[in-house]
Amino acid sequence: GESVGLHLPTLSVQEGDNSIINCAYSNSASDYFIWYKQESGKGPQFIIDIRSNMDKRQGQRVTVLLNKTVKHLSLQIAATQPGDSAVYFCAENSSGGSYIPTFGRGTSLIVHP
Amino acid sequence: NAGVTQTPKFRVLKTGQSMTLLCAQDMNHEYMYWYRQDPGMGLRLIHYSVGEGTTAKGEVPDGYNVSRLKKQNFLLGLESAAPSQTSVYFCASSWGSRQPQHFGDGTRLSIL
Image (tube, rainbow over all chains, first blue to last red; front, side, top):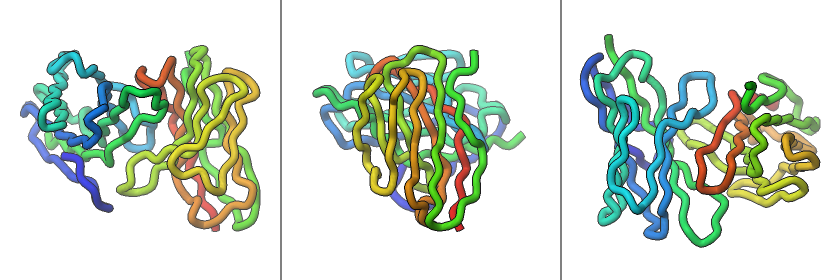
């Protein structure tokens, strides 16, 4: 999962496995969360988002889970494929008029064929 | 539909030189952002804009200036480049602060 430090956390999985990428946040006022995927040499790309009135949201092969009690967010990728290899970022935004989302440092997902 | 386009894609500068990074979006988004990304550091917000003619400072604004004269364009300027500004710069836009951001593919800037 996400952590402070100069080296990105890395998750290595086999093709076909399910992947779970974790993200912890600290701001109890955060109420909007987004997951982005960044492939090498490209900009981040939106995957899925969730608002704090939900605890689960599903997309195509992806599910985001939100646990507000422990301030934890996870991204689950089903049947991981080599094309899923990338860095995944979570971002949060809070109520109260803030225009600035806060990004985590990212987790590198490596999918082995 | 081009989305967010950044110009140039690569640039090498000498210390003290100035330059402007260009960002254009064709989605009629109100919000635009400039980030820098350094190894292991994630995305750090430099400046942002909530509409044409507005700008505001982000987390790391020192050494940079921005302008949003037209809704579709957001310019990032370096007046006197320093080696610490070597980074990959990303521009993004969104409908609002609580909407997904759309990113360009970055400008890779090296300052010698």
